[in-house]
Length: 202
Image 1: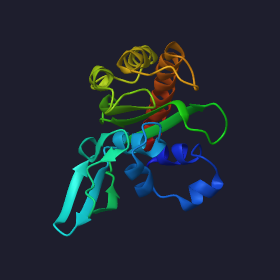
Image 2: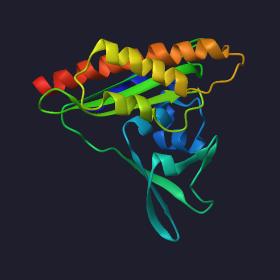
Image 3: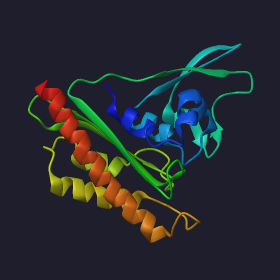
Image 4: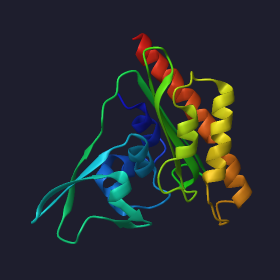
């Protein structure tokens, strides 16, 4: 149903972390280089937060307030993550890391839903570790209503790189990270579109 989750889980840390960690823990850590937060933004997940005052349902945009900061109060818990199910959909995630199990140098995720006529009815694109708080709205808007095509994915990659705001650090310089944002966006869009096509045929 959500192949992007399996893609991301394969590249998170090591088997011990993958088997013992939780999606709730990842979301609450709110690390800008953390994979599952990007996955949840791409899938438009909702976070269910509960405390003495009752229950709140938050979008990922409202849940994450910045690096290492969430909307969860000191007396609340994240108790559930909800994922909307869309017909004729596909998704994908890809990550570049310095070594296996490391935090992302850059990663990208995408989800595509197809209309009956094969056009992209809905598209979301998320980036990890390059300073993009939400999704890449300009690229998403450009793709909606179009049939999946390589030239459109190339343009979406260019827009994703422009939307990025990375910093130079031990994982690489700014230009390298922007290049990765471009290339990885193209790759995940291709794969998400192919998976959506398979779901439509199935």
